[in-house]
Length: 620
Image (cartoon, rainbow, N blue to C red; front, side, top):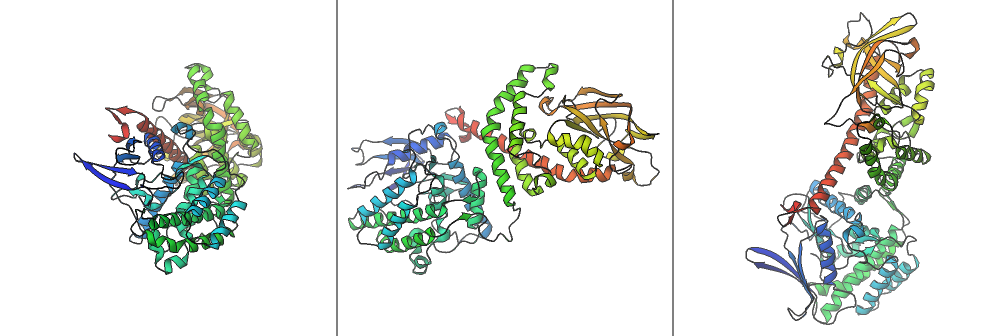
């Protein structure tokens, strides 16, 4: 690791490699060099699948080697001492830093209780304590007066964040040189040096991990940058990109209030640590060969912190975003954050009750009805403005904005319906919005948008290969002032929902046109129309998907509807289908990604919890 605090030793025995970390000898600063805390937090994180070396034993008996120590497995991989990663190309450098920042977001997402680390920290007031602690540490080791450090300590004391009560598990010294990467891949194998870990504000870690973006030019220009492993400026990835990735992984806003405080605190801490290393050099108790150089960087670090303290705001969107792909609008970011918060507070906690509801109903007809809890969640989402987010003209969101929301809702099997963003209603609403008459919109679109009714879409047929829609046999024939529909459809999703009031049916209309793509029409058919019959629900991998209204075979026998029910006009079915297809495919794909992310997370949790033959599953 990069830590100069606790001496670290490489051990070999019987073909196995280990690492020993111990307290330094001699007089020590209070509350420093807590190797027992390193061992405890690594043990908890290792058991939860977080990348740390496996801790093997802790010894508090100082008679063994003269100090407390602990032993962990040695992890073989890459450690980068030059934080700029100048030896890497832009693509690999970006991948390594992205892996680092995703790992940090993972750390900050842990629940302390699930880790068994209750009481690990000292409760609310982390920032206040940090300022006090590092000022005390600095004062105890200072060898000369540096006015910038005094001024910085005063500014930090007077500008504590108002939300100084967050309690996440934080590393305390999270930098890329405290990480072991896979020998050939941009993948984190282990995070090292947990001596400063505690519970507190996660932005302190983020600021510390990204402080090199604001590194004092005076240190680099004087050649002192190599002392702390920084040799050059990084352009790729950008600070804004890393912040955006971190915020996305944690589901928080990309605007970071008080980030100037956390950056200033990071430099204050770095300056105090540097002073401490130099102080140990003066008494002959420093483990770093270059410890005599650290005295020269305290002043420029403090001066840079004072400059950063004057900056009012930081955001992943702070600088120009030209050249970046897939940029959300500010409204898209805001709505996505609200959706994530709503999911966390209301949707995920309801999963067990929803599952229990359907399990209790078994094969009864009641299973097609919606659970009351789901209806309550829908009303709550509507009240918060998280409703019909898929439709740009209604929500004000772009397809890109909504794609990321669809990914989030895909993480829970009933979440899309909570926000009135579930198929096939979304596609049907798009059809009516884009192609419907004013009457069709009033009768069908408005109640669909309000969530008062649901719908189904009927295109696939049982007797032909429906991947080629021109094979379609269902007929739509004009007879006086009505259309008559005859044919069979199946896999009509949502048709089993008792609230399903209308179907959009695609069929062939008589047309002598030579084009195969101008022989089809789409028409609105109320579900209570005589001649329309639900034949049977069809299973998918053994499931009937009751919560989604199932997937039904439907027969149409001389079903008559008014001429006004035709959508856009005769022979316009393929035109409508193409307009409906694009957004729907994006929605489906992004929801599938969300579902896959949940499946992977569940699998990883299981691999971290279950043991076989004396090992966690993920160790085999």
